[in-house]
Length: 290
Image (cartoon, rainbow, N blue to C red; front, top):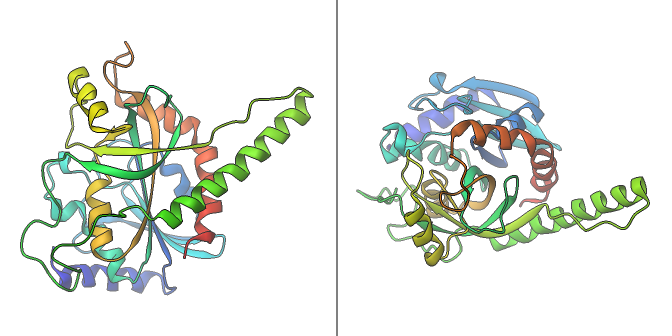
């Protein structure tokens, strides 16, 4: 997608919402409920936005929500586009191009992921510290438009270390609050809960889930979680000098780790179970991003 098309989409969004957008969010499968937390919300179906694709996957509402979270102006993608849906990579990453054209400097990418690390159980929220791109294509392939950034952008720090520290600090505060509340309620010393772990996310093309042999390979490569999104968006964001925070919701154990059959319904159910913690975490993080 060209710079002109991204600008056209950005101009359309500005016509619907006049405030300067500070933070953009992409909500993954089962995590769309955060969109209901937006104040003074303006909801725009994707089909109304010039050059936007359509979400075709269950759990992706397919609309852009503009509004405020804790007095911070946000743009929230309630559903994303996936390479496995048959879209070109330029369509998959187009919303991030539009966010950059809107002047957004902070992007939160969320997703549903399968656990490769046996210590990451269902319902774990994983802070992405780095990623492996095994999708089979790079979103920057093709002619480079200097409006978007450098031909060969550095990927040493795709996920902002400052943002990671902010997220971990917020999570620790929430953990302490939950611990005190539990001990006050029961009168018994409790084990401190873990709200946020940190790990490496591996992006694959999908849509089939991975085989046990593939999961063993990914573990050897250093992956902690695996999914079918996020990596292209993160790469493009960094090319555009947008700071990225990534959070995965571990919705299932990857193939071979559990004897259970993997299915999309499980992904949706787990997302619903962690929704309140996930929403609280985001609401506390967003005002701290700069």
